[in-house]
Length: 66
Image (tube, rainbow, N blue to C red; front, side):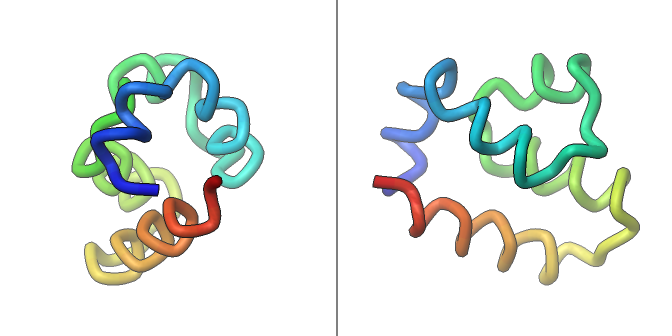
């Protein structure tokens, strides 16, 4: 699924993202709001990953959505 669709359907998709990245807080999810770069940044902060790793995870997750 492309990020325009993810952002548009964020309220429905957010639950799946919460299951995937459980360390993110409700405030994190509010700030993300379906924005790819914001999600990547929050994953980097909470999980201590570098940008490339976080991008790869987010992109893999996005491709799995239907």
